Image (cartoon, rainbow, N blue to C red; front, side, top):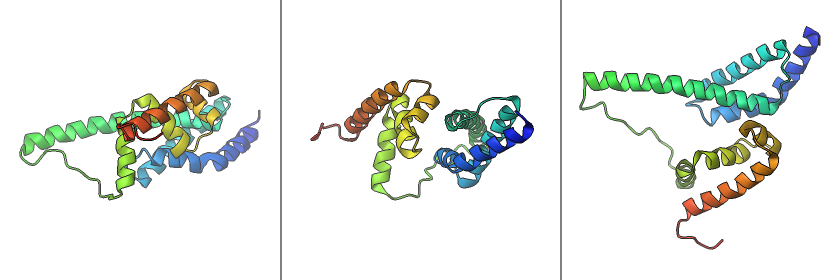
Length: 172
């Protein structure tokens, strides 16, 4: 395919999916600016792969976004650990961890707490499907499984969420 054809296809994919990829990244990033930077990195990688001849799709972008986020988190975690060690060495009394959550929505907090307590495979499928609004085939592509497997995982994840949210086994 010509360079112009690659450019047109990439532009179409970018226009169609930028908002979804940004929302996906934004929910996992510290702030909007960081999310925009990470999303730009996803599309930079996508462009380089498109030029090489890789067939791009929305699920491919989500998988790439997960990898970009993972790399970012690893780097951020290393930096945070270093800062904590330096702060502790400089002032061991005030260097303890601090809470930064200014949000005061009890329902949101309960949902996030419940999600945080789920096994990663349950949390991933729920977040991809409901927060990131991925279709079942897109979730399957991101997780590397069949659509049938996604339905089974969703069923199990919903049950795990319900059990964790209401451990008394309330009315189902």
